[in-house]
Amino acid sequence: MYARRVLNFRTQFSFSRTVSTKVSLSGVFPPIVTPFDANEEVLLNKLRSNISIWKQSSFDGYTVLGSNGEFQYLSLAEKRSIVQTVREEEPKKTIIVGAGHESTKITKKYIKELSNAGGDVALIYTPCFYKNSMTPAALMNHYLDVADSSPIPIILYNVPANTGLDLPVKVVISLAKHENIIGIKESGGNVVRIAEIVHRTKEFDFDVVAGSAGFMVAAYSVGAVGVVAALANVMGDKVCDLHQSIISKEDCLDLQNSLIAPNTALTATFGPAGLKFVCDNIGLYGGPCRSPIQPLTLDQKKELSLIMSEVGVECDPQF
Image (cartoon, rainbow, N blue to C red; front, side, top):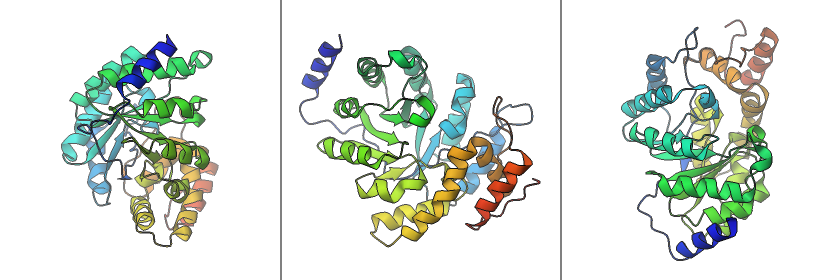
């Protein structure tokens, strides 16, 4: 089954790809937080107010319903309303929507629903619950079925810290031949892997996007073109400055290195709760996370506040 599917795929896409569905992935696309009230209900009015602030940064678009948007905890109806709200507030910006699910069938349904709500590109994480069954054949067929049926372009989402799986490079390269798969978000930080993917997909219209502000210079140096970085929620101008400096070939190592500690704190260390705490401190609405994610303890807030103060972002641990 696997060999036959791959053979058919390679035959179909052995020539030049069409670019009618091409969306530029060059730039900064913050994975925005999802605001909840004390009862963990979605607050669309707070989302609108956050966007009014994010508009002041030079973002090229937004990643909606990503890992930092707590997408796994949202119903389809909530996801639709969130995407619709972002589209209403930003009618011209590129909207990347997290539309993945463990099931291929449901993933296809989510993509259609969220594209109708205003999404331009679908970000599809690697199914992982049945990890031992996620063979290269299973992953290849999942993404091919999704891409074949999707009305919008697909971005592969490799996030091994969350899924426990690295999407095999050979699978990525084969999938890059599909005209509706336009790139991959690489969140693992393996620069050798990023370089290999860039090199081996250069004949296709396929982009690599860094999944963190912590390794932008390294990723861009081997061919990445953009970034989806949690840090951009709260330090958008700095992340945009770094993007511009890299592509302008300016000296930016000091800026890059200064962003590593806050980036790590807001992702690997404290996650969405930490990100929302900082949002609350700088005039954005962060609010609570959905259970079972817990709010930061006072000691955690103090630790995070110290890290953020070193890059000029002042936070009150008592907030």
